[in-house]
Length: 335
Image (cartoon, rainbow, N blue to C red; front, side, top):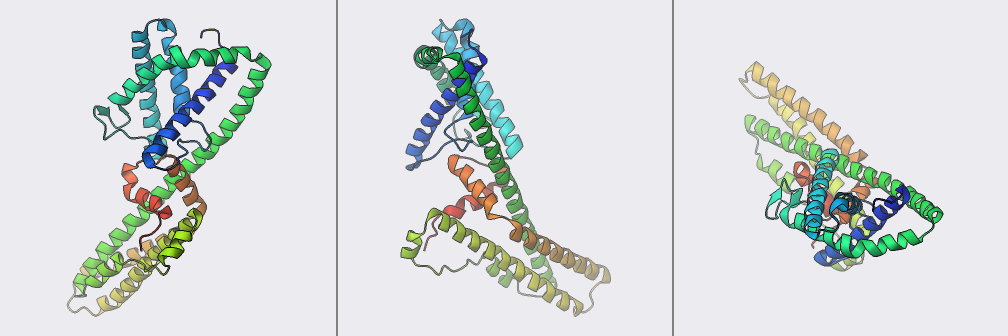
């Protein structure tokens, strides 16, 4: 192991990225009962396994003849890698791409005892079974071929990483915008209820309109024939239409309340001015939110959905409601 060249290390990294992708994709596909192209990247590679394999190789070099120490060193090294990778990714993208919160003896949901033990078992399996034949094959390949292969795969890997990071940033921005919009609507709804009570207006209309669902005009058979892309486009159109309806309804009520506020008898000037300022502020927020709805590009939603398909267990505690909204965009609606 000590005598590997940089290109050989790169090739080992890519090989284990691919092996990890095969394992994770098969495991998650069986669990979800449908094929899942698992991982952060678009292509057939899972970097956490590549880095995990490399760090295990490095960590176990001094103790490779002692299986117990290989287990312990490999487990500790890979667990530390998994923990800091999870923390950093969540910090950057505000999404947890794997979560062990439901597992026993987990730490902050990023690592857990069972997975750490699995890393230890994988360390022994890799050092004693998997790596020797891979090492033999790589040593058989001429250095010039190794260099070309490593460079070629590195270019593809870099392109994929850049594209996937853009997908993750689109998901982050989409979740942030949706959350901001949802919170704005909820805030305005509460203020409208206060205003309605102040001018003796029935607040039930606001609640009913806010909770109302858009009617579905297509039948079951027609929906079943829709492709995944058509389902997404249809759901996105319905979602945006619904948000626009809510905002328009709120705007209408604010304008109506502004007029009725003028006719409230014996109103304290200070309270009147306060309510009027709040109504005008609500109108400004509605206009801003309407612009957000119109500017939300389907491309950002598509990128968001694609990376969530590859990571069906992804969670975003800060954006839980928005995450569900994005995932629901490709669900076939119930009739």
